[in-house]
Length: 247
Image (tube, rainbow, N blue to C red; front, side, top):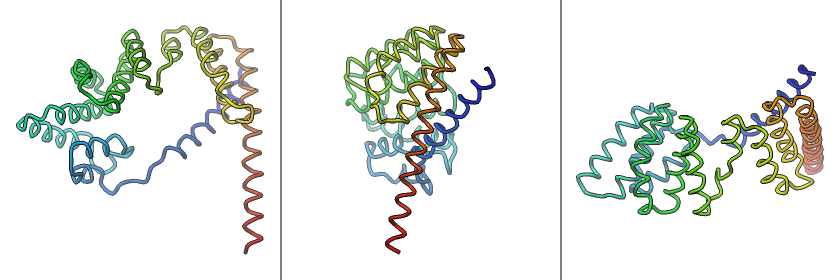
């Protein structure tokens, strides 16, 4: 049973990762740091930085830190408080990216005290960064407070608590919250969504040491994935036939 359980979980996990990578890959910029510096304003640089996935493709995070530090000093000389905040949020994100969570959270919490001066999008980025930092530092009580702030602001990204419950070892509670928030959001014909739903429940049950019930959900996930893949295959076949007729 354990071998079969591992095979099903690995099967679904591998497919999910592959599809996630395919969806998330952005075209590589020739030189993200140079492009960042070529932007005409702090707002444009800020937007470009957070929109660029492969920002360290040509220059290291430390090169970015040196560059951003210069912009912060120039903004301080100009007494441009908004520019200072935006560049320091970028700086905090870079520290997070290199794994220096203490420095990242120190910068972010200082910005958090003046969050009322930030626009909603900047505030959302700040809260997301604090959320991620507190997770890495295992400060789950602070992470809960950030999630509450997100809900109050009407934000939709990472506002649930089931991942925090799971990190605290409360896997059964995490599963109940996950089901409550997600069971009505997946359409009956969304086979990939249904596979992800049952796979997630299976993972919580596995962590809760309910192996047999976990296996049932992993089996359901595998079944939905197979239906999904068969549908994709049929769709590709029909497309190929249509293309052939026009040749």
